[in-house]
Length: 470
Ligand code: FAD
Ligand code: EGU
Image (tube, rainbow, N blue to C red):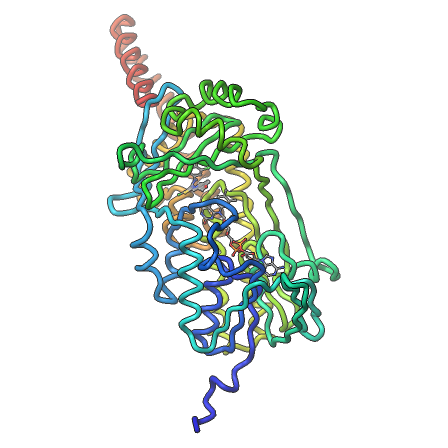
């Protein structure tokens, strides 16, 4: 017989939710040798014919990749994604302007949600100490005993106990319900007035309808559309608009009229008939922002991913932040020798400020985009960011760069962003004061010929305008 090794005395961890974060987390716990069971409401998506669910593709960036690397999945997932080196900004007149995400070789990836989920489940299953249970919907659980009750499609119940329960069951978490009943649990949720809808842009003559290695953006203040490339050479376009606007459009002709007004260059690419049909397939989908704290109950239960922090999708960070949760938890486990009674409070202590920071940033970006971001403003702001970074690469780092391409703690990135704003404002004030004083001195010393002055100024303006509109 086998020796009684660590593996046989390890504690039992129940991961509730077999979505992106749950499946990845199962791998993290399995790697540590725990006895892991995953419980997922849906049937096994690897067997399902149609996978229903939220957004089709997602932007994967550094934080998410680092987490995948921990379980040896980075290369595989990256090879199945499509690199996006820049955004492509579409103006109302159909002009397209690329703005790189960073230096050459820096990019984010468009990945297929269903495929990523399948790969992670398959990886989790390769650990002999992991068991996946589908068709298990958590109904209730006890924070005192750790006893969970699951319901199944055939109406039966299943009762299971675990030493640690990891709630990865998404924005409407059933695990979180028990937290809400407790004293000193902070919770807030906000539905934004916008909904989203996904539309497909098919390939043309077997090729992508637009340039593939870009995140395409149509910024139109209240209305915004984003398109990410898929491996099958389609694009998935996500239209964001206020629910009240969705409701105004009730006929196919009104859909075309609306697209004619705001996204004219996309009509022929999506196709008039497909657009009329797909627009009415599903109603606009709601977006919710959830913040809470603490993330744990005693040494029994911990929340991760959207269950702990649903964020609005205006930074492309929801999954990335959830994946980073898994790394942070693993780091704390290492520091505190897997002692749950110490690890769980420490995880809450270090992670809450960062998850709250990304939730706030995503909400801030939503408000900013909605308020005044058209294509010119978007281009202008990104150019200013990149210009300042170019001249002071060690002082001014664009916020999205810290968020997207580093593992700088989200709350530190926000601190630094405020600090940089001060530097920039002081620089502007200093520069402006200097220019006024110096300029006045020179003007008094040698009064210029006013006619000669005006022509260069005009040229200067033209240059500025062409910079904005190019
Ligand atoms: P989920 O993916 O929601 O998974 C939860 C799982 O738990 C599901 O499988 C569900 O069936 C299961 N479950 C639920 N209740 C129970 C129960 N009672 N019992 C058992 N199982 C249960 N993020 C990015 O990083 N980049 C992007 O570009 C991006 N774009 C987005 C675009 C849109 C339009 C939206 C809406 C979100 C986007 N996100 C993006 C965010 C991303 O989708 C989420 O952050 C991510 O899916 C969270 O993963 P999760 O595993 O925590 O939750
Ligand atoms: C929204 C929906 C551009 C996928 C934020 C940028 C997003 C994504 C941006 C969706 C935007 C907005 C950033 C990335 C990314 C930009 C980012 C948004 C992926 C600040 C599938 N956002 N998204 N910022 O910089 O950092 O390009 O549905 F339009 S990726 Cl809203 Cl980097």
